[in-house]
Image 1 (tube, one colour):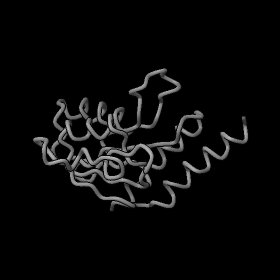
Image 2 (cartoon, rainbow, N blue to C red; image 1 turned 180 degrees about the horizontal axis):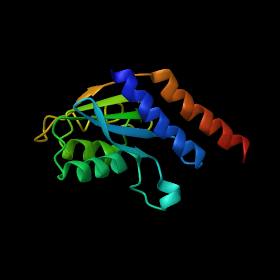
Image 3 (cartoon, rainbow, N blue to C red; image 1 turned 90 degrees about the vertical axis):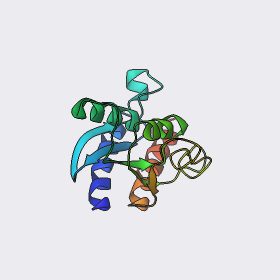
Image 4 (tube, rainbow, N blue to C red; image 1 turned 30 degrees about the vertical axis):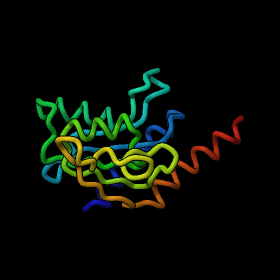
Length: 150
């Protein structure tokens, strides 16, 4: 089931890539149903917070009518940054499922592990490496193309 929902997150990442955005996609799932989607729109929106995870969390909060996303899982193609990892923890998301890790900026196991830090009043379970090759591959393809165009 995790692979199915990661495929949905990859579809969102492809939308970002079409817009020349860093191709990161996310979906929020509750009771086996995708309730929210997001993809990176930082450049388009000229907004440093317009990351896939943040946009998906905002949409899920609207759908559910509250900020506590108990019973929800968030699937994201690339390990969240510190901002997104903090938002995931603050939203009370149950599980964070990550495609590929980000050793340079990741805050869910690489540089930091905000969602599982027991010093906070809520922890989010982390699962890594779901469709890892596909998730890493779309990023590699994007940056390869970006380097060619410069």
